[in-house]
Structure formats: structure tokens, C-alpha cells
Amino acid sequence: MSDVADSISEDDLPTDFAAMRALLLVERAARIAAEARSSTVEAKLAHMKLEIARLRRETYGQSSERHAHLIEQLELELADLEGDVAQDEIAAEVAAAAAEGKTLSPARARRQPKRGPLPEHLPRERVVIASPTVCPCCNADRLSKLGEDVTETLEIVPRRWFVKQTVRERWSCRACETITQPPAPFHVIARGRAGPSLLAMILWSKYAMHLPLTRQADAYAREGAPIEVSTMADWVGACAATLEPLTQLIRNHVFAADRIHADDTPVPVLAKGKTRTGRLWTYVRDDRPFAGSDPPAAVYFYSPDRGGAHPRTHLADWTGLMQADAFSGYAALYTEGRAPGAIVEAACWAHGRRKFFDLASLAKAPIALSAVAKIDAIFDIEREINGLAAECRLAIRRERVAPLVADLHTWMRAERARVSGKSKIGKAMDYMLKRWEAFAHFLQDGRLCLSNNAAERAIRGIAVGRRNWTFAGSDRGGERAAAIYTLMETAKLNDIDPHAWLADVLARIAETPSNRLSELLPWNWDRQKLAIAA
Image (cartoon, rainbow, N blue to C red; front, side, top):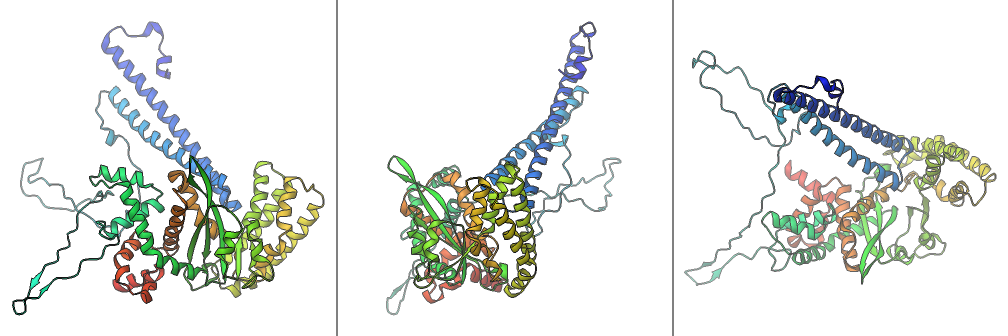
């Protein structure tokens, strides 16, 4: 009960109905107000927890997947609590007004905080409220406009389905009686009835928004455009085949680089009566950290397992610098005598740091805390030189970073002699000490990054999407997903809207000669669009 009810004794309770009703309204208003205050406190606590988690992530670098999952859960919890706060505040103000005998609309009960202006690039639709024709005070009609107040509201019109009719008129020549007619328009799907924008939306929803075809079919049916799941599956397969030349061009571009990032992630695959675990491998070319002029791109491959034979097949004709984790399947790529040449290994400092960070955050181990602090000092300098030319990066590393790396190596060897090899801290040290040449290789080449985060970012969306689509339908489905992910992720790396790009490419790819297909690649497509706009 509320403080109002507690302060009234049993003898003081009113006996008539009206007084009792008024007392109940006051008590109800006080109780709702207390609940609103409680919701506000809970929301503030959740907000503080979320900010603490984010600050820890910023302080200690990229967090593990477990910490990233915790932040996602906190964000969901905070969103629900903020909704509760808004609902409780409105209910409290309406209840208080009712207790005082007033009427207050829920929509006007809560003053919204002041917001920034809405995006300037969005079109404006002007709706003018009819003004009075006479003065409400003296009823005179001599009104003069002084100005106006404009209230902006962000709004959206649901997507509009329509049937596009392409009319081809037939003409007959009266002189020679020859009948002429323009050729039929190109369809991505032979004898299909899906336009390029619809196909692009289905691909975008499935592979970028991670919505299975079954959920898409339900949404389209509710919008009045029912499409069978099997029909959409046929369209997805046909689009993958049509776009295969672009996928191959992106693969060629990635493996033309002298330095790449590599990583993989598990993918559940549907099998008879169960699911098995396949893999999606990614190789990323991103020269932006050392001011490279070549556009970034990512290529994906699917395999039914995580055998080392798969990366050997993917990289059979490639040699250069590869940044990756310590997966044993990569070992054969680094051996001398490999044809066409040994790949130079560059280890990921984020992986090495993560092992110490877990021990520092969970067990508060002093050695782990010191290791994290020493590694973070190296990361701080790397953030300063990100985006500089390779020669400049190398010069700064030799001057400022090399002493820190040497000090870390000396300290770690000394501490390793004092701890057990079976302890977690000993295993964390061995992970770096046994691969120290690969960890220190970035001091010899300004093109190398300190971490493999470029590849990890490329597979992060897939890891999140697994919660929605649960599993791939087959090995062929995994291969098709790898091809479409190649197109989607490359477009995003070049700051291109994949949906708009795919819609335009699907509409034009048939009439584009094979020797000009490179014009449709994301980085060239963007420049072309800018030129047309100019």
C-alpha cells in the first residue's frame, strides 16, 4: 500500500461512497507514481550497467563474443525498461489528473525531451492545418498572418506492391507487310515474374537481415502479395547463378593482394534427422589501415567441416602476408617449399590479449592485469597511426612500439619461468611465446595490422544471423550463402547500400558485356553513380 493509505487509521476511513472513491483514486495515483519512480530507477541502473560494459570494452579493446553477447542482452533489457518508464509515467500522470477530477489525454501526459533536427536529406510533406477565418475573440475577419510554427514528425509509407506491365507493340509495314516488335525485356529468372528490386529485397532480407524465406513469405502474404517459399528459393538460386561472374571478380581482387586477413565460423547444416557443423571461411582485403588505394573486399567459402585441406585449396595459388589466428589447419601454408611459395604468418594480438583479458576480468590475476596493460599500451599507439602510409607506420613502430614489444617479451619470459605450464596464465603466455616471430612480424612491415579484426568483423554478421536462420539447408545452400555473403559484405565495406546495388546490378548484368562487368563492382558502381549525379 502507499504512504497515503498507511497514514490513515481505520477510524478515519470515510463512510460515504463519494469520499471513499476519492480516497481510492488518490491512493491509486500514489501507487502508480511509486511504480513509475521504481521503473525509472531500474532503467537508470540498466543504463549505467550498459555504459560500464561499453567503457570496459573501449578501455580493454575488442571484447570476446561472450562480452559482446552480454552487451546485447543489456541493450535489450534497457529498451524494455525505457518502454516501461514511459508507460508508467503516463499512467501516473493520468491517474493523478483523475484523482483531481481533471481529464488528461495519455498522448499529452508526458513531455518528450527535446530532440535534434530530423535528417535534412529526407523529403518534406507539408500538411497545413486550416486557420480560422475570423477572430475567435471579437469575431472580426481582418486577420493578418504573423508567421507559423512547424512541427516535424518522422513518418514512413509501407512498401507498395505493384505489377509492372511492359507493353511491346507490334507494327506491320504496309509496304512490305513485315511485322516488327521490340524484344522482350530481360528477366533474371527465365520466364519468371519477379523484378530486380523484388529479387534484391529477398536476397537482402535473407542474407543481410537474416530472415528465412518462410518468415519473408508470411510477411508478404500479410501485405497482399503471397509468394510460395519454393518459388523464392528458386529465385535465390537463379540470382546466385546470375551474379556468379561478379563473385568471381571479387575473389580475383581479394587474392591479388599481397596481404589478407583470414578467419572462419561454424555454420549448422541440416542433415538426416540432425544437424552437423559446417564452416564458412572468409578472406578479407582491406588496405585502408595503411592508406592503400585499392578498394576493400571480402570473399567467403563454404566447407562441410574444418579440415586444413580447405584453406589449402582456397589459397592454392596465393602467397603473401596472412593475418589469422593460430588455427593448426593453416600450418601447412607457412612451411618452406610450398608451391607457389610459403605464406608469411602474422599473428593476431587481439587473440593473444583476449586470453589474458579473460583471466584479468574473471580471476583478477595480477600477471594477467600487467600483461593486458602492456599490450594495451601497444594498441594505443597503433590507433594513432591507423590510416597512415605504410612507411610512416613502420617508422613510428620502430621508434615507439618496438621497445614496448621487447619489454613485453622480456617480462613474459621471466614471468613464464615462475608459473606452471599447466596453469591458465602459463598457457596464455605459451600461446604468444611459441609464436613470437609471427606476433612481432608487424614491426617489419608497415602494411600489417596489429589484429585480425577485419576478418572477425566480416563474420560477425553471420554469427548473429545464426540465431534467426538456425541452419543451412544443405551443402549447396552453404556454398550459395558464401557467394551472396561475398557480394553483400564487399558492398558494405565500400559504404554501398547492398539492396540498391543488387537491384541495379540484376537489372543491368544481362546487357553488360563480360569485358565490362567490372563496372558493376561496388567500388566502380559508386563512382559511376556519383558521375551520373554530377
